[in-house]
Image (cartoon, rainbow, N blue to C red; front, side):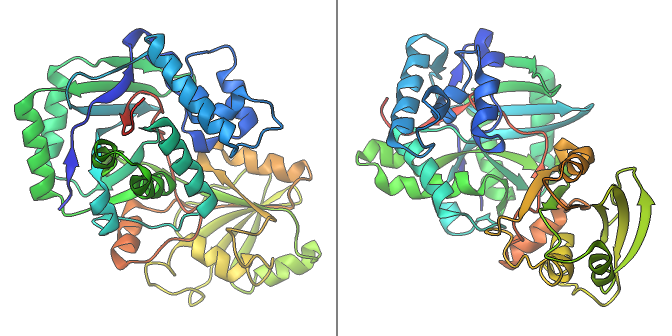
Length: 413
């Protein structure tokens, strides 16, 4: 069963919350992070992306970056921008985007659960990205990256969360510059804390990583690097927010490719028609209406691609549109064998819109773009339960949790 605990969060004074809260460190480039934090000394990006405070010639993985993060975190504390909760608490985090809300429980989850696959994964991780966050955790003594977990709905937990939010006021309530509303409640009542802990330990057999595989892997692997017993004990747990499955929103995760692998437009379309029906539809971006339908933008024209019957398998991995596209077009036609390492392909989260795909092709940067139908949460569960992993860049969850509002301290500042 799922093991969770309350924790003493490091969090901002309410007057600073909106300024501290920043987008996750891994959804923006260095230049985007620098632009976002410009003129805001309280932005948490000074901690999660501290390379923005160093010359561009300094690598993002240089030791100076991690030492700067540590210094900046201490400065936030000394300026009373952040404070540490007096007692271990749970927290409720509600995000509202485009009139749609979802609420999750912020807690710390067990590293042992992660290692034993009670916390289930569906993606591979990259060593260089893991090592970056391991160094960040060890040097700052803080888990700043929140791991987004999902679980199958439990009525008693749903009811508890709804009642708590209805009956009590939020400690943070602001709308970020992207229009997403963020609200956080503190659960500091001992009886309520005990109730939540027991509900998860008796009613939730497992949880699933929805977003944050690298953050989870880094937190798990950093535990062995702490020397004090106190830090090791704290590092047995890592920062998570748990959302019930029916509240999650998965967006499309689209692809752009630099060239047609030496093919003419006509030859490319002919080869594509081997496994897909191909229909030209004009200049208006095509958002697929269902599974196994794809949009393709090529030479100022959008096409509807529909996977032909018998060209894909119905197992949990084979039935995914990201697999169908890879196996029937990207690999055999465009020569992209490994999406993780091939520099000819890039990925565009659905939050950026289909126009972003069209712009990158029209600019000449890319030759062709593909829009995909989103993976469902049940597909994600099925794959994780089967012990398989999804192809890279399969899911894009929105809205994103903000960094800096709730941090788990493991080391000694």
